[in-house]
Length: 400
Image 1 (tube, rainbow, N blue to C red):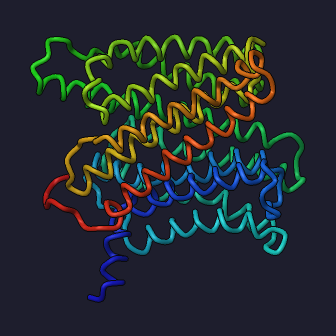
Image 2 (cartoon, rainbow, N blue to C red):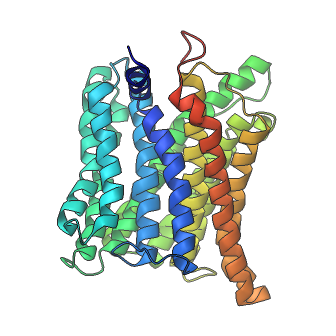
């Protein structure tokens, strides 16, 4: 077998390899392009307002790749079903890539065709994971295909406005995607964070135990679903604000029983608690914005997007990549810096309005550039650290 064929076989053996690498590289590039666009440093621009492009590509581009890599890796691990690999995985990956490229080629490439390619990604992912879910028979995992369909609906709503088919649907589509990710973090983060933490504390012989309460778990997840439906039907406003406050309180209570303070010496574990904590903060900020306090919805949503989504996807991508290539589940200084930088990016972004009110308009620009720079540094360093991990063979046979 030639070197190229061997690389292709390794690269497309599990979904985390192509999608996590693409997520890291694309996120770095997309943020750099966004800063160049708002700074007026490039004559190139997508065929849509730069703010729309930035929001869309961070949510449906970067986040879509991270979600795909996670599902295609975790679900076979949960169910024992064969993974999606080889030609099928490559086809899904290139469908995602085509969606990114074709949006830049409009109007040379037909806008309708570009939108169709982009919207098709999440339904295709759902179809690929369905057989494994059926084989596994886990009832609680059947929530994932409907979430992916809702993500596709959000993308469709975005494109309908871009194509001048409907009015004022793009913003609703972006909010739907954010709410889907909040629900997904609630479901998956709520499973793995207490589970992994409990295992580590038990191995240490710690007396403090992680506690979970089924009723609280159901209420917390139900509040996230209620927020999604409220935003979809009524939009941002007082009702969504009240539901968002309830979601923040319930998910904050859930998090408080997971012994996060005991994980400070374990960055790879601590970051899961930090990601869920950002979800709670983001929900609270989103709720306050809906009720007319402190922040605009556009500023508040970055607590969820930069904070929760950025942190939790990095946490999942790093942990899964290390574990599934046989490497120790340990975060050194460089990887710990990645986790710190993404939180700094979130703090700077949500702090922009407050800094502006205190220090003037120059502070707004400084905070925006600092936030973008921290995001680029975090994902750029992730890409450098994990390039050999994601493109090379396992280092220890038999570990997952």
